[in-house]
Length: 553
Length: 71
Ligand SMILES: Cc1cc2nc3c(=O)[nH]c(=O)nc-3n(C[C@H](O)[C@H](O)[C@H](O)COP(=O)(O)OP(=O)(O)OC[C@H]3O[C@@H](n4cnc5c(N)ncnc54)[C@H](O)[C@@H]3O)c2cc1C
Image (cartoon, rainbow over all chains, first blue to last red; front, side, top):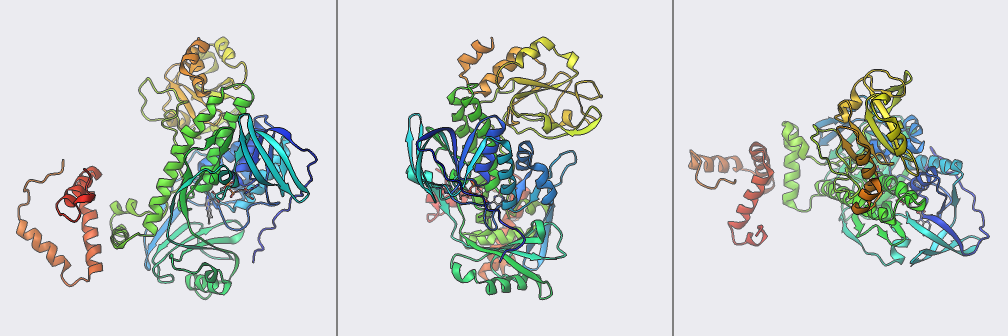
């Protein structure tokens, strides 16, 4: 099996050092570990990544990458490649028995660089992240390096790394545990990973075919070709199609992996005339669970090591990518002396509610797809029957609530609104894109937000704001960088030629919006006031309220 | 908010209509029919809070389900 993709093999290099000390060690070079390493590197932070394997993610795993992830990968430099290679889709169709009950369009409103979703095999994404990590010059990737012992210390974490050339010890000032759902780090620290197992099994088959299906998400409940179960069809790059068959709890996972048997299921679905080859087969039982806390002293958990969800809704990898986005700037700020260590506690305060939202959504989807009892089954089928005829029932049908970026509503880093806003983006929300022009050339707003600074989005001409005060805000580490947005083309400003930036941010002339280095809104005001901006920046860096007033004053 | 005083103009007619709708259906089809009726009415009411209050009132109304009702 396999054939459309050639797995890269990364060379193992023996490490001479014994007991060396590194500021940041990432355990696990999966999509999340690589993303956080690259993000840290782009902030000037050197990182060592330890991975027990010597290649990228094997087989069929994450395929649906949501808009916010694409934007994060855009900031990291691999977004355009995802767009070029991936399959863009917007339409989803839901079938019950032999009929389509409804279709939805994720309605890509125009004026965003990235669409709602791109489907791409996880191995491509990881390969590009590896390339970008290498090109950064600050990420040392150590393959065939399995973390075999972990001990938390007051000033870091002591690790033992097992390699083909023997074991060695090292000390990490900070350990980022990105070692996946079976996290060794989590288990060695004895941390409970609690939640629920869904009593169901799913067959994941990737098939290669030249099919006439459109690039859409098709979900069947109880179709004639797979009675009693659900089936999901997704298109990926290289004419690879992902098909998920719900098998039920009593299925024998080994017997179900028999290629002949899988081919029979696929043929029943596609009809006798469609030619295909099998690329990948696996059988899963899904779980939803998380760690009670993600930060444990100098060890911080990200991605599947911290939380696990069922795949309906594509919230696993997309959630993990947002973990990386959330943590990288904070850890870099602490290591570079721009923020107190307390800033890292906000990772828990922000990402635990986000993980809970993902767990809630994917649990509800899984419960709809696998009804727990006769009554649940009756309600599910009733909703499907009604959905065919009545629009009101369509929102009740749950074949997966597709990943949405977390709005960090209760964030301790946000400065609450004091004025009235008619929508726009509240503090904690991730920035929204808009088409702009710079010096007459088409550009995107998000390209100008975040990075190694806070961004102050100022709706007006540079001359409308006090230059000296802005220059002062622009001093030091993680300073405030102004970005001017104007309705007419102006020197030194982004030209909001369609008015979408102003509309999406509910901006009026003079509006000021402070964005964090991860492009989330920290605070917003109807008028610029330097002291308020300075104070909101300090609050977003995790300084205590008493200190922010004194320091900003 | 959940109205529990008598409000129906034709209670006997309602009872008859419900029973009639279920006549001849096997238990599984009956259950789905009830579910469709409940979902249609829930949407008509347009308030999940009212439906939750109805669920509690229904749980409370019989000894075998009372323990599940919200206190
Ligand atoms: C069938 C399926 C479909 C999915 N579909 C989607 C989807 O469409 N969209 C989506 O967003 N998500 C999806 N997911 C979830 C997604 O694959 C995961 O959330 C994602 O891989 C998590 O990334 P990670 O980096 O946290 O962990 P992993 O990808 O599991 O990476 C962990 C890494 O750690 C390494 N490692 C483990 N132990 C050690 C050790 N002791 N020492 C050193 N290295 C170690 C491993 O080799 C691996 O490289 C799907 C998952 C499945 C199973």
